[in-house]
Image (cartoon, rainbow, N blue to C red):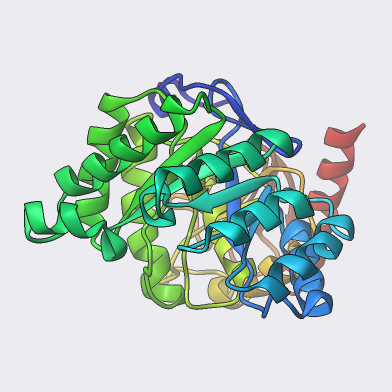
Length: 364
């Protein structure tokens, strides 16, 4: 379905960088990232999880490299996976160099925490030598000591000062293939920091609410923070950080993008919460359909409404719609046009068949 004018977001045009075979910034699609929670040195488990994340739609996957065993395993991990891999580095500059040599597409570092300027230069040289991007990862929980002493506590100004200092470190060493994040677990703090950073530079921004919490609470906090910024045209790549299966991070990321009409993947179901007017069990029907249609990757909109109050209106704006009308009188719509009636026991099979047929039409 066509996007309506009031849903068009004017995204800020940032510099375009390359992370493996993915472009970030400029006119590139907003990418969705996640991070493994396996022990990286266990390459079998890590490769398995990366492939699961890629299958769920992840454009980029980050892995933690806290020790030499991890960077040694990274070479095989990169070889056995297709998605660009970001090596997450903290403090140990040698791990960054080893990761670049192992084939990482990007290094997530905080240059100010790497050590001396000579160590930063060594990391930048490795990134240049091995065509590796860098993410400046500023976090409210790990700000430089001097900045914390200056501001007394994490605040938007502190995060942005850390980011701009680290930007200058890279620029002074003639390195420009980088993106930046200024994350916090505080939604308001993160939003203000990203807004200020977006005003201060044109480098691509990696959005996220760090340590957002479990699946339910974390998804809500991330939706508010990331969604708020995206609606203002800020952001080039996102990660929803959850204490949950990383695959759920990818799903949540695409739900945020889909809800804003920025980027769609799979079947987006619009459904009512149900009430006494429902002509069929809406909640159970939606649960079953979500499961049966989870394999579909092509974008498609589906409305499941239990009665005729809002059903026809929603069906007019979705690829496929179902409006409850009583036993035998539930009505299926295609592209907003009434198609045929369906009995309640047949709803699941009929809707699945229609969705799969519609997807084949889009492919062909």
